[in-house]
Length: 574
Image (cartoon, rainbow, N blue to C red; front, side, top):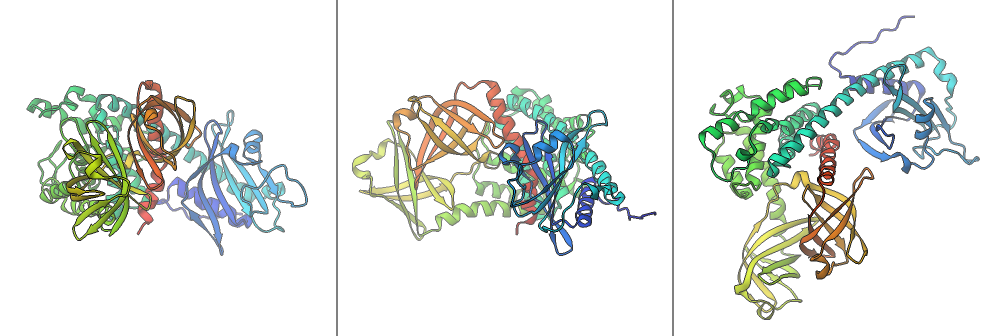
């Protein structure tokens, strides 16, 4: 018998794999089909794609989640990896099962090993999971003697091997990116988060332009890699605190071409490497044709390069550098308006302005509340004062009211160096610079509130658990909200670290998501309270380079692992 199947050369290997997974699920009458992959050490399983029956079709879920294998009680993954054979699991409530179903609602489950490597060294690196809620539909080994079923499984295995090769190449590419990122970090420490910030701004613009998932992925990688060529530029030039000479500037202008060359030569086995190299090469071209390296003009410049150009400039303006301080969001918006049609593509500049206005609106929304709970941090030469109270708005004026502090008696106005205000809404904490006009007893009248913008916000935010160990060996559970190579921020609910401990060296165990625990030492540099949460900024001190490298490796891995979910979020959000 001859079977004919229409070949669609527009589909990728991954899409073909998903087509055949749906086919086998339909043939066997399964309700759930799932592609699972294992890491090299068989420590965790990643659920790459889930297909759930809806009528006669199996609709795909784009959720990409990772779970530690040891957290699955009596799961068959370990048995599958060890035996390299298909595992059938039939739930029988009358017997005590040696293994529990992966999905509780399934009455019957099939775990089909997927291999990588050649016939002499085949390893189980993935699994095709099939589940059914029908008690009467029992599938056993005889089912797979059917030529149609075994033939489709062979196709799935071959497609998976192709995908595994592609994933391995991408992993090697990411390792190269990480190594080069480390070099850049040493040479230009202010820029460690810059490529990821640019990538996130670029994604936001791409979403507004309606890019599909694949195009967003290419845009993201192009943005992450756009400055690789700076490894060929002297660190003295990159970190020079004064204006560059003409000769120095000419050297800097060569870095996009260097980036192009690195990507072309080092990532040549990576899918879409040619496009990525071109997009990186032209990110410093100007819309008016006065950019470099080739003086392209208008739509001669690839659209992705025009996007990265705007994202690159915005992050540079919002971030502190050795030679300048960060600009406010308002000033950045003004610069975009002023340079529309000159440096920037006018349409992309408009999109970026809208995105910035949305982030600005978060702060504006908080300040629009008639009354909101917050914390003042007043710094003098001698000490810091943390004062809880309410911010009351009256038209365009504000006053801060507290029942725990007397501004007349407890502080001298002449000694005040700075005043910060922290407000929390929907678990979002905003920081503001405050200028006061006067105060009286328990009321402080505010003449100006200016929102602080964190240029490193995108790449540094995280949600991790950790343990703080003080000098008395007491252990406190903490929630880490931001982390970088030199510092982190965390909070503790309903508990405040005393002043004596805050001045001493402390240890923190950071618990990353893959069960990797990293110990760091340091001191608390800032603290403030919002509601029941005590927030702390913690600067790392005397930590080995290997520890810092591990932290940055985790940060980098997090960026890459969440890329697809970020792309999905941007693509599907309203």
